[in-house]
Length: 315
Ligand SMILES: C[S@@+](CC[C@H](N)C(=O)[O-])C[C@H]1O[C@@H](n2cnc3c(N)ncnc32)[C@H](O)[C@@H]1O
Image 1 (cartoon, rainbow, N blue to C red):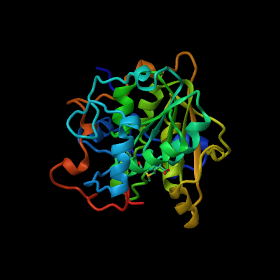
Image 2: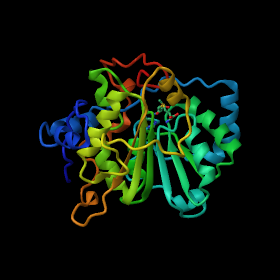
Image 3: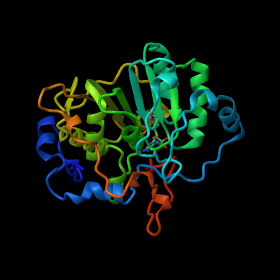
Image 4: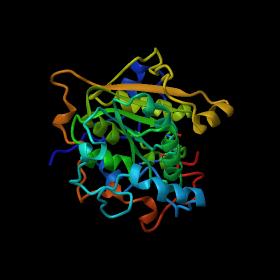
């Protein structure tokens, strides 16, 4: 089994693209750290018992069959069984360029963007059931027939459900920031994920991200700059991209702006250079199966994350 370059915690101090490249994650040191993240089952969310209100339950019952895609699980309900694969032709009745969203929340971005791109298909990963239910109603109202939602950990889904180079675009908007240093290991944007994404995007395809947390924005920049399979696209001097014009204002962005925080967009592209091929390296090497699939709350002992605000990540 091939091993994956080891991630270390990115510094948040870099303030230029050049600086980011110099101070980004040390991929040579601490070879065990990234593997540990997965072996210990660290995921980017805490899934509490999801209480849906009556209208959400109704939405699930009425629209679940149309928009939800069931996938084989492994040890938990948000895991994805290794060896699974999505039959996109069966799901969408065609094979079209595919966009995925990590943490699609209440479906605001999918419902706003997908109807304007009937030539593309979209899949959102979301683990918080009340948000999933709300997104079904929004997708239906928007007539977003080219969207499906998968209730599973996005990292596991991207790893196990699609093959190398099969992804035409990826979005990660307003991901849970996990502010405390001891929780940084839960941030979805990590060196492991960047390596995985680089392997799944087709050459030239984009990963779009946005966050209203300055510290996380620089963290993302460091992580992405250290991934040789990705290169910046449309980046200004500071490394950030202009706001993506199609991205609607979601309640998370509104909340950040209302609190006086700046929103940073990032746009990174899977490199398309001969000899720089992330597909040559399997995304993740996880001895002992798929520990990504085990949420923190299932682990015995120490769970400092038991009471986050909102779906997760102490926003
Ligand atoms: C702060 S919300 C942002 C939602 C949406 N992107 C938006 O901008 O409105 C982050 C969402 O990501 C979800 N999430 C976190 N980690 C996830 C993962 N590994 N897989 C799928 N969803 C995840 C959370 O449940 C939450 O709904």
